Length: 165
Image 1 (tube, rainbow, N blue to C red):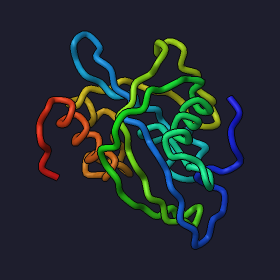
Image 2: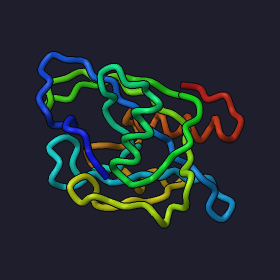
Image 3: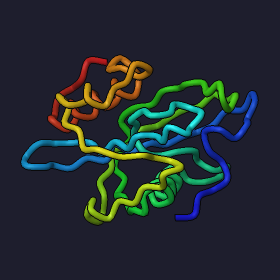
Image 4: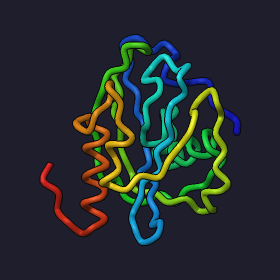
């Protein structure tokens, strides 16, 4: 796992960043679940929170190629990337940047038993069904957080529903 030099803490005052994240899903015992890693406690930006995996796209890099690179760097895993289903913006006060995040459906190519965590990035991970998402919330990131709103939309789309967001 070779990480690139940029991350959520490298100063980028006044810059815009593009990030791509993956709603990595699979059925476990017949129930659709999403893979959520938990950010390390040592992270300055959003420590100890579960999140959709992904990261910053390099200048000139194809967004899907960048998403695949991020998943490989952070977890040693290969993903099949599907369609984008959600986009939003946020500011990172630690980095001093404004980010545009695009969320994609994805699945792991290999079995999840091969997931590797770098303790500098993530402390643990879990697979969460839609009705278990509250178990991935914190005082700083509740179910009303935009990323959880995106996850609820993804689950609805997987059920073939047209979500009302």
